[in-house]
Length: 234
Image 1 (spheres, rainbow, N blue to C red):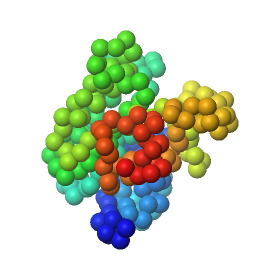
Image 2: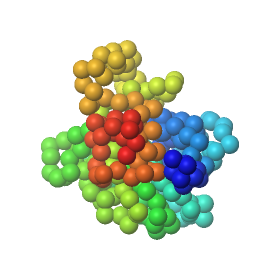
Image 3: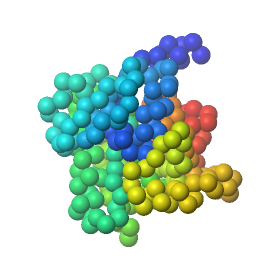
Image 4: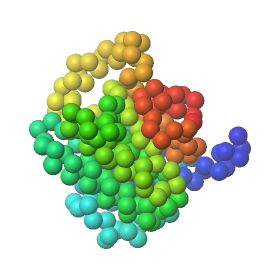
């Protein structure tokens, strides 16, 4: 145990999407984890949080990181939680964020941090064949497949199902917020009836940290795998 603590006492994390619901949860777990030395968030908006571990880069153009490359080296893990809803978007617009932006960021980080572990938050139902009927699932599948070919030390896909926000975390998407307001109070029942299809922002964040530190037996983690890693480690 002492060797493990010593080995992982200086984990440095880059986090994309820290102001979204999932990203807020991941950021919280990073800040409370004593094995995490620092967290660099990169996004279009500031997190409005203050913490000795937290450093932020706010910029409008996330497709071109050349101006900040000097600040992106020496990191152990990237948690990519940035994403948008497919509702109201055509495939080209959705792909522009879900695929183009993700791959652009990953290529830059792989070049600067070849020893990095890259973890991408996808979603339950993602289509690895890229040929299914659901547009969002095809695009997510294409993104996953491209990431798995990147020259990082390790790459993992997280496919959570329903995510219950905890610790005052809220979604910024209005219709998501309405859904959470209706079904959130029944989360204990959903967890009892469908344990393999629900998780929380806390569990998701812990699982991502556990995998970044110790790895996982497979590259694609479904909701049941996320729950296991959250509970038991890798």
